Length: 179
Image (cartoon, rainbow, N blue to C red; front, side, top):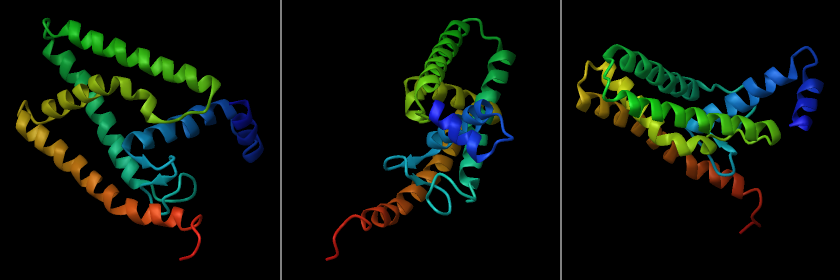
């Protein structure tokens, strides 16, 4: 990470390199990779298909906001319900998510690995929280919540699958000999 901090300092001397590292590098890269990056983390769902640049990242912003909104809403739902029987399960899930997040942070203190795959051990509790949040927003109509999530993330999946062949061709054509 010290090399990255030096790069950040050289590129923008007026910015705190530590804050930039955790916010613009680890945070932003990880959040986008949670939504979808492909290949060797070199195919992105933005205009250019690249990680850096002045591209529109609206797809990432929408889906990150959706996921964070569902996570936040799940906290409200759990707090409002006050279900004493479910409290130990929610507590265990929260502790597990925090432990995975702390391990991820510790790892990124030594190595730059801003990839959401390191958070995937907690995908079960994260998914449960997204489900609780969406069910709460649909006033406990579980099928509507599930259908909405499947449609929204299904559309993202179709979009990614449609883009991938062209992006992979673009990258491999640079390295393959002419036919």
